[in-house]
Length: 255
Image (cartoon, rainbow, N blue to C red; front, side):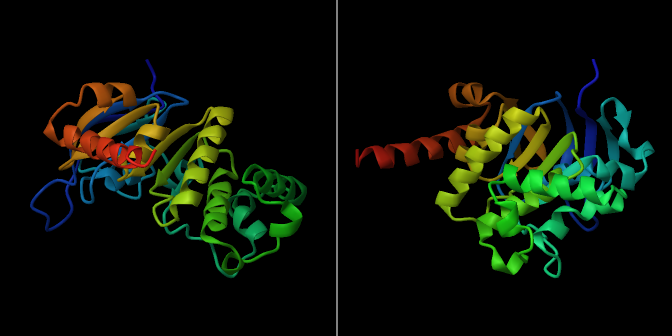
């Protein structure tokens, strides 16, 4: 069976480190899944994500996309097939919202009419009226609006895979909840494969069709949210679940 993404015994150790950031990790992701990757800081989740678009190269093992070893693929063409969204957003401050979204279509030499239509389509999808936002600059947007533009830019060339590295981590809780709901609706309508890194267990359980829990560079549990809640694999996973339950119990005191 050909998987959308496959890691085969992948290890990554950074120079000078006494441990592996990613330690002999193997897993598969099927096309159209929404995988959340959960763990505390330094557990290897961002390193794992960055090996999919070759921002980092593994020391051992293989990463495959649709059955092809990505080490044999031209890195520029690979990255053009993958959307990438980060917490810092990374919009170009000197370009308008429309120009930011059009960055990759321009590199791909799309016709101007096609690019303009795609920009407006993505702004509408992101809940930003094209006539109002197309010609604004990033500094004129709120944090939530900037994150929407970053997501639209990542989707511009219609990638099959989306990598999202704590994209809502710096956003207030009300906007974050709204963006989570919008992202779920977006994923449901697009049938793309999403990998979403977070350190928030509630976010991971809410968004993921499956959740990958990492600790010390290893995958501790990789299962549906229901199975993780009912059958935590070890004490670390159990502590995460209990922390989420404690929050829930806190709010129940006021109902």
